[in-house]
Length: 121
Image (cartoon, rainbow, N blue to C red; front, side):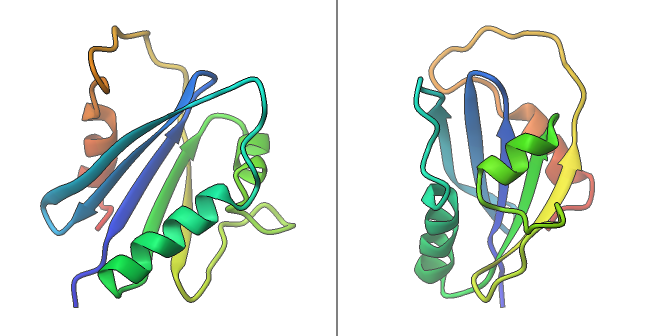
């Protein structure tokens, strides 16, 4: 059974989402940061919807520079570990500060693809 992989990368300006099935990219999105924090159930519900759509549990890779971001997104437990639910499993990865880039359209997702090359399947 093929299992979707969702790669999330947060920054002060946005959360970028890349969904892969095997070697195919099936969804790309940029969720802009607003003045109001997103609801803590927003991303968990999105991940559940992706799992239900594909009728398979989702492997999630969450990349954020600050642990507080992880808990704000509703994807970690009280101990700061990635959640493991019937619909998705969350793997946490830290990232350092990179150089800025110009965004055209949805921007480049090369760094998310690099995470996928680093053993995420």
